Image 1: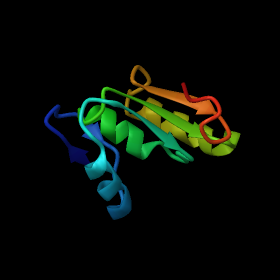
Image 2 (image 1 turned 30 degrees about the vertical axis):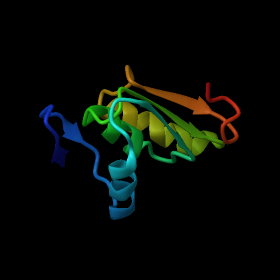
Image 3 (image 1 turned 120 degrees about the horizontal axis):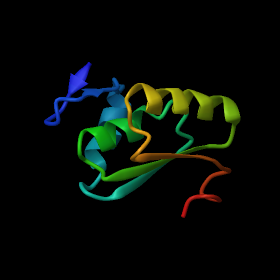
Length: 91
């Protein structure tokens, strides 16, 4: 497992998700639409790259997988899960 400057365990990212993470400007809030497993938003908040994240998916199944990831990495205080069609429920 990856560890960042915080020393916390981070979820593994595929090369594609690593590239996306490298493009995120530090310090903001991110929205991962079609999150599926929520690895990217969890990685971003636990690494310190983002201060908070919204992880959304249109289907309950993938959102449940995202919830398990958020809980496994103790990131529920910084990653908000939303059942949403695209950006419809993203503030």
